Amino acid sequence: MAQDISFQLDATDGKARAGVIRTTRGDIRTPAFMPVGTAATVKGMMPESVRATGADVLLGNTYHLMLRPTAERIDRLGGLHKFMNWNGPILTDSGGFQVMSLGALRKLDEDGVTFKSHIDGSKHRLTPERSMEIQRLLGSDIVMCFDECPSLPADRDRIASSMELSMRWAARSKAAFGDRPGHALFGIQQGGLEQDLRGRSAEALREIGFDGYAVGGLAVGEGQAAMFDCLDYAPDQLPEDRPRYLMGVGKPDDIVGAVARGIDMMDCVLPSRSGRTGQGWTRRGQVNLRNARHADDPRPLDETCDCPACQNYSRAYLHHVIRAKEMIGGMLLTWHNLHYYQDLMAGMRAAIAAGTFASWQTEFHARRAEGDIEPL
Ligand SMILES: [Zn+2]
Image 1 (cartoon, rainbow, N blue to C red):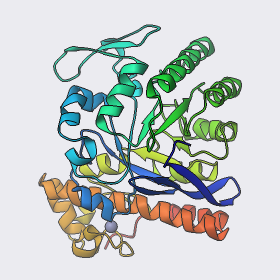
Image 2 (image 1 turned 45 degrees about the vertical axis):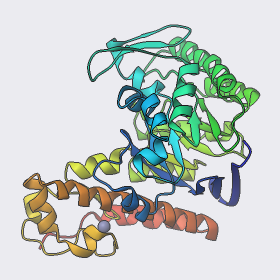
Image 3 (image 1 turned 90 degrees about the horizontal axis):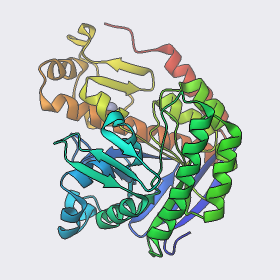
Image 4 (image 1 turned 180 degrees about the vertical axis):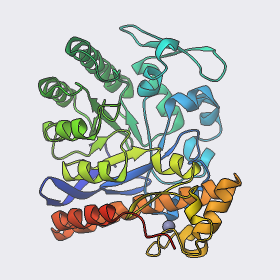
């Protein structure tokens, strides 16, 4: 890997792996869940609160930051870590996925993508070289290759040509990234749900050589069963001695299933986004705090959780502030959800280290099957 960044695999249990990515800004314990700080903030959370949930690393979005406040401005102000007051490692995406999601607002060619800003309609261009420059200006510790990601379902020819284009862009990303001690560059495997295309993509990435490898192009509407089918082989196609990152996943059971299949890193907006809409994630599954059954309930959301929302507030209070659209409602539920996700990761890391991941998974699914506690 790049100088000053290393990946140490400490334990395996079946295909599941536990280890640590060492960076100049601190260790990332794996399997790791990365909260998403889209616009230089994890919405509703102070950075020290995000850290207190147990997060080692944050994700930042190239697309959002290049439009507002711009990468050049963040660079002038000392880089993203200083700008947003997060001194731990930051991984940035390449902008590729979000630009692709713009649909009609974007135009793709061999060299890159031209698109219109969702904020003011202004015209912008991203290429592998520009994406590397933006991520350098942001000061990202882990940089992602610029890639193209077709939405599924798509026909095989479209997926194959898109994957080939992404591999040409991966080589250009590597060349533009250059030699940057202390910073890592990850390649992104594409190929949809086609095992042979995924294999060809992994082969091309290995040949270029990266510090870590992402499984891209999943969690785009294919459903959990299809995603798990793909994860039954996709991580195995990537180098064993490098971190494997599943982008944009997911719900707690998606995360557990991915770790069981050899994934080391994940990110998702779900815990923060669903917190803002009154959804709590617990060991017993999803709880909708908007529901009237909580209005008189003095019990905590989860009596075994030691987050501030569960330690100091009742379901009745959470229900009230969510329904009254008070800011603290989204703040408390985001805190709880991020805390639950990090607890989940810590539980998996301990079980993998102890060689008890299979029974841990049985217990995880049994608790969820019980459902939420009975109403009073
Ligand atoms: Zn809690």
